[in-house]
Image (cartoon, rainbow, N blue to C red):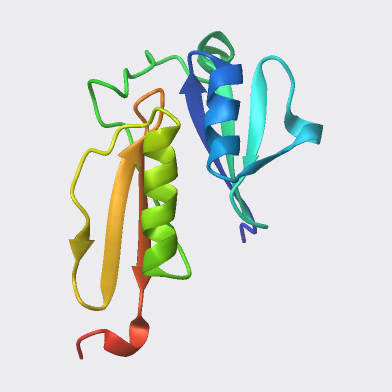
Length: 134
């Protein structure tokens, strides 16, 4: 059974992408970070490998999607509070990300989203399971 998740994302400028996510408060695992790739640590079990496009291309025979024009994936992560959702999205906007939808409050779940510098869509949510409708 799988114990960790590695999301692989193509990026145009690795240094700018690293600075963007560091600005959001994320760190990188130096063991898996070099001039072609950076291992973004999301949690103890979730990582995003940011791979420069030429290197990313060595893993697939398909063309790389332009995430600014096409949706390739929605990365959804939970947080510990509504305030954390808003803080992360506000920081993303400050770092040059794009807020592409208004926050959504479903009572038991609150979510908001942004696109990073390469257009990858990140959704953050807070879920209060005690308020989940029966």
